[in-house]
Amino acid sequence: MARSSYKWKTIYKKRTAVERVNARLDEAFGFEKHFIRGLQKMKLRCALALTVMLALAVGRIRENAG
Image (cartoon, rainbow, N blue to C red; front, side, top):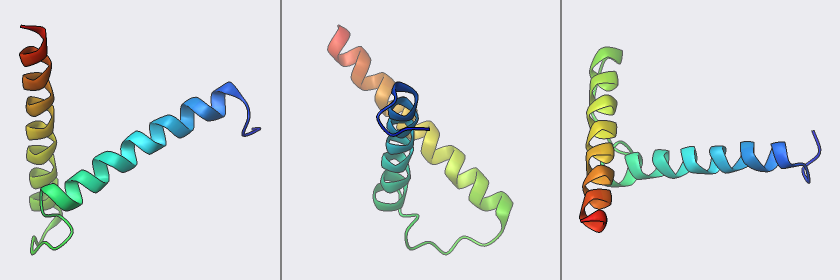
């Protein structure tokens, strides 16, 4: 796939967005230096962090819309 193609650009934009979310999880939610042991605990903590991020985004949207 050529880097100048539309498809490549849209895929790369999605990758960039995912990397921003990963960086925010690391920095803002403390996943960079964690002491969580066990896959189930980590999945739960990630799910909670992503839920908080979505709730914050919805709150910002509602704040600007009202």
